[in-house]
Each structure stands twice: as structure tokens, then as C-alpha cells.
Length: 365
Image (cartoon, rainbow, N blue to C red; front, side, top):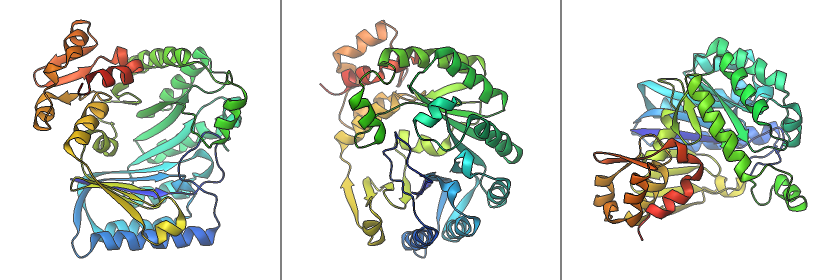
């Protein structure tokens, strides 16, 4: 069934590490964008209401939108799609733009999952990456979100300046004690063109080493397991029943439609990408790429081995690849790096930290 992604490209300011399509804009510019989003949704839907089972509003910072604008968007989604019972509806939020009025409005309009961009609970790290909230504000935002929603996820970054293993694990403890149900913990990526990239170019030792990051990552996975969070994807951990259903679509090749500046869709075997400039988006400029069997195969392996669900030998055979002929497969299974159970091959979580190397070795030779 179809999933829906909506991109809100607005923020109060640009974080030092951010390479996403996000901008600081006036209220009038935000309103113009939302009106264009509504029209795009109507154009896609036409007269036929397609049934959907997930909505994800991401950014940027969706919680920066005032209620009157988010209301327009919600109404368009309700009017142009048939919502399946039990639909997962996520909205991203930052601690400094979330309040009780917005949370109440989200809940009344079908949102049932909040994803909070915490990133760190260390004051110096928050300042270093240009976040506009403090540690206390992040904790208060989690508490407030839990008043309205059972399903609250938090994002954290691994590899920030002056990373300390014990301090990072203490942050995990703090968030778990607040009752969150999901954690997304990402390795910090230094994207070209960002302020962080310029800083790292000047000081190659500014950030922790890859080995240090992998060590903290492995300690974190152990800690989260003790706290009752199951790892279902390399960067994602959830209490039982709280996995991100929408994100799972991306990892398993299911269909989704993306609305907004820079948004992507995967429909009928084609990947569609909206333009990443406002002028291009308003003119409905986009690119379309037909995905061939080779690309599907590579994505199945690269994304599937990131997940607990793994990859299918049958699926790969239908795409023209018998993975059992790969000389590395037997070695990886014998060493316990990969597990085989019938049709399914999974990556031992102990090797998630070096997953890219293993994936490359399993691609067609």
C-alpha cells in the first residue's frame, strides 16, 4: 500500500552539519509553499482517492509551521487520500518549536507518532552544531510530547566534537527513562558545502575517529538492548511494536509518493525527484528515472542487509542474480558474519559497523 511523505523545508536557522533542503523564510513565503503543496497533492490524487497506510511529514522543521498552515496541509491529505485504519502518521519536530497547542492539534487530526530532533543532550555539542535548543529544552519537549503521544521517537548523532562514551550512554539512559519508544542514532556525516565541512577542512582532528564512533555505536546497541529497544535497522531501535512502519517502506522497496521541494517518490518502478529550488518546485520541475533490475538488485542487497529482515535469495534470483555463487557468501556464513535461514540472509548485528564492506563483497562480481 502507498505511503506519503511531505517535505517542509523551513528552519529557524541552518545547523552546521545540515546538507538537506532547508531554508529560513518569511511567513508569506511559507504560506505560498503550503498552498503549492496542497495543489501538488490535488494534482496527484485527481479524482481517485488512493488508499494510504502511512504519512510522514519531515523537514526541515515541520513543527515550525503555525497551526493555520499545518491545518491546510492536513485537510488536503484527508480530502485526497483514503486513510487506512491504523495508519501511521508521523510528524517531525524540534524542541524549540514544539508547544502544547501544536501537540493537541496534531493529536486531534490523526498524528500518532512524534519524531523529535534532539541530536544531543550535551550543551557544548548542541552549540557546536548550531542547534537552537538546550538540553533542558529537549528533555522538556520529550516530556510534553509524551503527555499527548505514546509513540515518541528521538534522533541522536554519534561522532560529535568531544564525544565521550559514558556521557553518550548516559543520554540514552535519560531518554529511555522519559518513556520514549524509538531511537534513531545516526553517525555524523560531514556533507560537502556545509559549515561543518569547512571547519573539518581546517582541523582534520576536530571530530572523533571512525574507530571511536564504531566503539560508541557498539556500546550503544548493547545498552539499548538492555533497555528493551530492539535493533531493526542499523540506525534504528524500537520498543516492541513501535518500529517506524513508513521508513520500512524505503528499506524494502515499497511504493511511496513524496510531495514538496526535493521530495522523492517511488511509483510503478520509477523514481521521481522534485526540484530542490523553490522556483523549480513551483514550476513542477522534476526528474524521472526508470529503475532496472540491476538497480533493484543492488538496492535490495544494500538496504536489506541494513535491516533485521535481511535479503531474499528468491527475490535476487528473479532479478538475475544467484547470490549462492558469490565466493564471499560461504566465507561470511562460516565466520558468523552472515546468517542463513531458508530463503533469508541476514547480517549479524555485531558487524553492522562494517556493513558497507560486507555489502560491497556481496554485490555481483
